[in-house]
Image 1 (cartoon, rainbow, N blue to C red):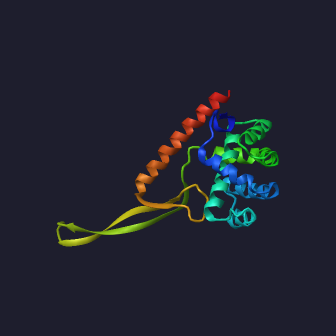
Image 2: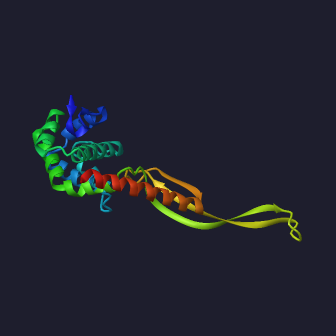
Image 3: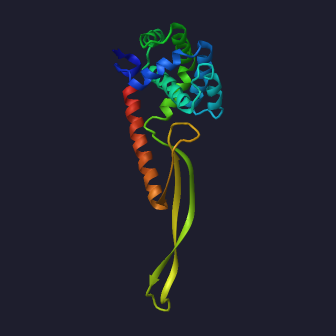
Length: 211
């Protein structure tokens, strides 16, 4: 079966599996979990995975894997509905087609409707962005090199300016993957310049298509 929130494609199997878990949670608890899922989706610093764990306790779905799976499913559903501009009534209907109870489907529909502008803004800002920047620090590195210059036999220290960049996965969980790499300062400047050039070109195409 094809769904609008999936760009008229089949719903992924892992989402179908989580729909079964969502059905085990009361609609009241689901509303509270949706609030946390939206905070996760919009990078709200007040997001608290422990609250989700507490809301899932009654349904015995409070393991770390359950919490991650349910949050990921809600985020996927809301992102799909909003990014594909699915009408609210169609989204609620599709949730029921997936096997979600009517009252649960209505909860997701209300979450879509009341947070559409906020999520749309975040999705636009994060377009084509895979990882988020955690830190960017510059420090001089000194290396011993051989020299044969007159009056400088042996070795000497050479200063090399590098930048340490740390990025994170976009999962949003406390134990998300983090990566770090060193890059020459001048190469980093060139990379930023080229990315800005590409962004300006993309923005011009967007403006042209909206005219």
